[in-house]
Length: 191
Image 1 (cartoon, rainbow, N blue to C red):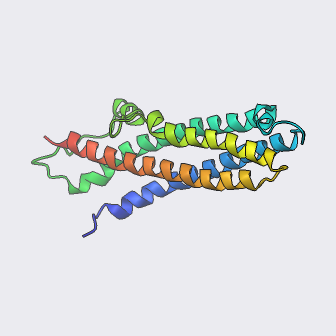
Image 2: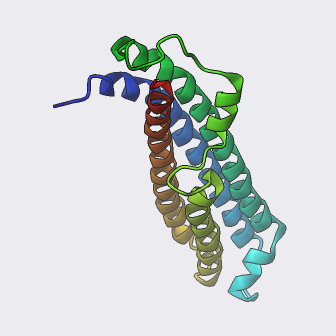
Image 3: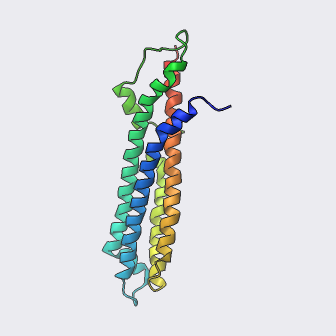
């Protein structure tokens, strides 16, 4: 049996998912473009790792850092919205004998939701693995492309794999946040 809240939860989650996909697509594309420029600017006689020491490569790496910061802001904003939404979603099913039906979101609650530690991990820790992997593999793809006479297929492959991996991690974080905050608000409403 499907939870009656599921369609509403999915509807409220989707705009955040779309925004995350756009951020990731733009960020990984920018990082890949900078990595390709780094390869193009590296002389054919230079060591392949020389490409990862160029200003162009550093701009690509910096773009991944910017993407991570943008994603953290997006998820924190989504968490605040999920917290506020939870009251409206839950209110129709509350029993006044067992729940505080007059309670609503507070600024303090919204601040807690933005920085909540879920499943034992801060948001930064939860996303550190996927973003660390993205950074490490960008360096590898850039060096391989430089070694293979500027063959951008390594960087294109990096962009595709990384966009999928980051998107999966971010969409999971958004969905987990929504459910965790809904559950927390329901528990807080109990008398």
